Amino acid sequence: MNRKVLIAEDNVELSDMARNYLMKEGYTVYQAFDGKQAIEMTRSLSPDLLLLDIMMPLCDGTEVCKIVRMEKNIPIIVISARSGEEDKLNLLSLGADDYMTKPYSFKEMVGRVNAQMRRYFSFSAPKPEVRNYGDLAIYPEDMIAKVRGEELLLTAKEFRMLDVLTLNAGRVFSKQKLMDEVWGVGYFIDENTVAVTVNRLREKLKKANVDGLETVWGIGYRWKK
Image 1 (cartoon, rainbow, N blue to C red):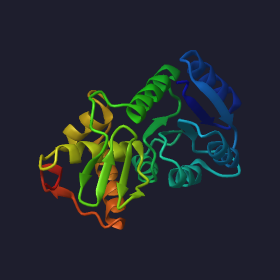
Image 2 (image 1 turned 45 degrees about the vertical axis):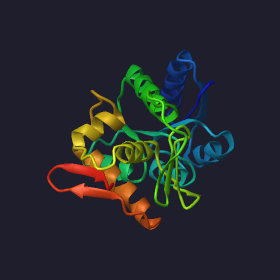
Image 3 (image 1 turned 120 degrees about the vertical axis):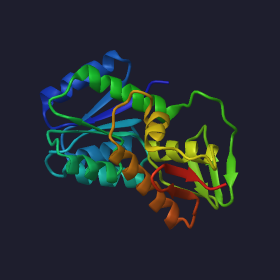
Image 4 (image 1 turned 135 degrees about the vertical axis):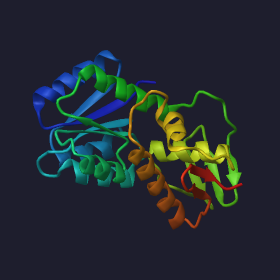
């Protein structure tokens, strides 16, 4: 199936370069040049991934990320000139799946897009159609989690983390092990990113009255048996 990428970037030259690299990789690419257009095109075109600049006219990327994440569970890769840790953690807490700092390598950008697409659409090992944990139901093939029949709105990383922990209920996962399982072996992120993702997932489960995600202090996390 041909995957669709929406590039939200007000710099036309950068947007065109990113488009050309992604089209060579076989993606269908759409371009938005301001935040308002990015939101509208995400709703109308249903892209499989959003490549999102932060500094854009009409509506900045932070607000776009917040709105898109409320409506879609597609991967969001943020691209920004801001390199501070607080900026990165803020965007990750709003639901971004990855963060690249300008200037960036277009080849690296393609690699990150490919990695997000792989993790979003498939898992390497076959899994049952549905797994149940009390009121929580996991649908691995569809990347969906439901509580009492109502779907939880999870990002790709949040779902992957929930899938890994529930599949291995009772087993404690260190932050490094979760990095390997959720982001992939050799994919560089810091431990704060894992903690932010765990906290987002925990809050969503808590709102749905699901209590299964435990912190094992000094070691990591597990799903209660």
